[in-house]
Length: 248
Image 1 (tube, rainbow, N blue to C red):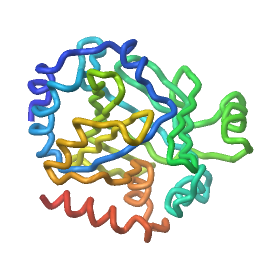
Image 2: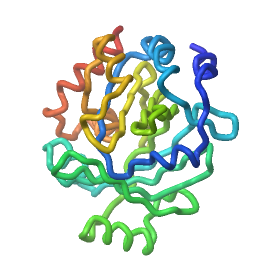
Image 3: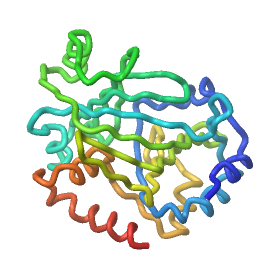
Image 4: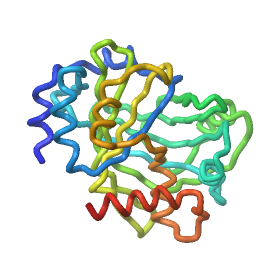
């Protein structure tokens, strides 16, 4: 599939324009589907969305290193549906050359709040400055160690009313020490809006194609793939979905 041939039909927006819809405090809704459905979906989206273009590229590469406690506190909080839970990561936005230490908080109102500080590069070690920043944001001191790397490609869309940002992630690969895996056959799309009741062309198209909203965490699902000892009974339904999509 030549994705760029579909993306060429979209009007482009710059990184500065996308920043106006960055939605650091937002409502998220994810959709997971088979990559063979992507071309038809892109064809139907182009009249209602613009696409981010950075240095001539409409597909960006992301590199992420997640951190967690030794006993995987953040993973278990997500698994146990804990509200006010965090994820901590370094993320490099390769096309723009930007790297951040990021904290994502899922609060008890269902909102995602992302806080971040700019850094020079991804590091396997948290400096004193990093640790102080995390303590300030999280509200307590937590000993964190690096977990897995996750790499993926992303297309970022902004609807023409500038009320919604849509990201489409694919070519997901992950690794930890000597073990690695991928979700090459999957697409993870995510709508980001200020309010949950905002109308969305993407949601309408997804509904037509029988693609339903699905809570999906790259960190959690790759953790299960890389570590057979972790608790995952509450993720079994998502694992069944992944296995079904892999077989299509």
